[in-house]
Image 1 (cartoon, rainbow, N blue to C red):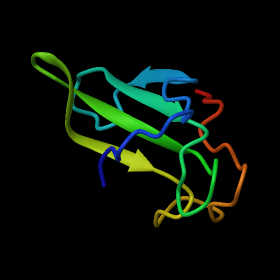
Image 2: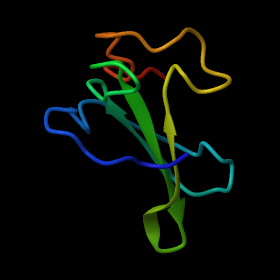
Image 3: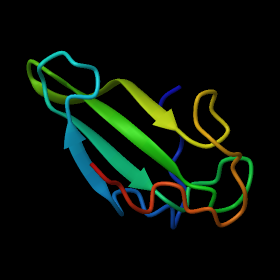
Image 4: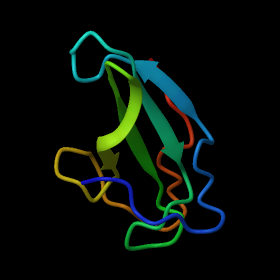
Length: 87
């Protein structure tokens, strides 16, 4: 699952985090999109951009939200999933 179409007011980039999420030795970026519409308004999401030998790439990116298998809970209006990231 990759990035979707941006909607006005998604707040893409509201929160940011870095790490090697796919354990390939390259830095990756997670971007909070707390007002992303995921079947309901402002449910929120996280977009993961993976690092490559040439830097960050949208190729193979992943969009994580609460309606995705493996993520606890369900997306609800105004959840703002992705408003904050922790390490």
